[in-house]
Length: 345
Image 1 (cartoon, helix red, strand yellow):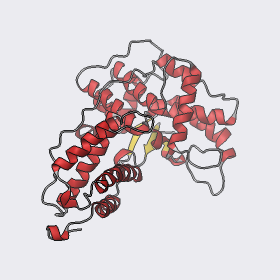
Image 2 (cartoon, one colour; image 1 turned 90 degrees about the horizontal axis):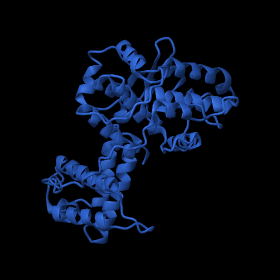
Image 3 (cartoon, rainbow, N blue to C red; image 1 turned 180 degrees about the vertical axis):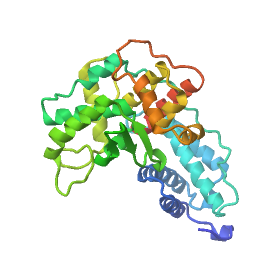
Image 4 (cartoon, rainbow, N blue to C red; image 1 turned 45 degrees about the horizontal axis):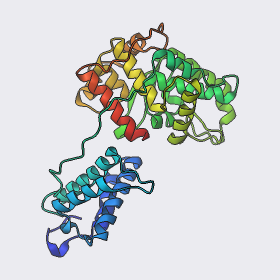
């Protein structure tokens, strides 16, 4: 795509989108990330084509602003508008695409570089479980049944580690270190690996599941994924969402949620019990400079100690009002709220 920048060599928008997605693939962006970007840019290229804006040099700042207004006024088949997050993501994808085109010297400048982005509502979700409510959800699976043991083990892992649903689905058997009390999370968000602490109770349920259930679910050759569906395969993240949502409804705690509610609940409880914000960010895998550098200063043993001291599982249950916190604590909870939207919709 590199080459002299002139009107005579102006590329078609649609073909450039394909080139941009190939560039992302070569640089190891995740399939989910590329899929989302493909979908968002398809909307833009179709909008442009309908208005005879087919060449990249015809995409101006004014045109991107018109597209932004189009997203605001657009109504879906059910008559509802696009949510603020959807509008934000579609404009953001256009900005990143045009930024790439400028860096490849396909266009002189990114016409969307200083476009004002839609404001996102940063409300903290009300659906954060108290420790007692979390325990009620955990006991919903019927552990007299083989699949109940599996489901209980998965809920315990979500609650203990705060990992994302896709990270849970991708766990391999050997990722769990029973002796050290840790779990290796491979290729989390941004394709970053991390080692996180896991509580003794969750480890006990994993051991029970491996001993009593997993062998009945294996279809040879063994995929080596820790948690298996009834077909012997790894779970699709959407299935995990439906499963956890059903158990939360079944617990009748008056709250709604799915996998991410345990991530948010764990972080909130550890904050209330005195854990340093940086340690929680390290466990959650938040990509911030202060989080990344903590691994160079703090061993997993220290993280394990902090996790054991502040995670509500295994501690006497004390009902406290959930407080959003101040400063960086509030920012952590806001990050989790925004993450829940993008991760589970």
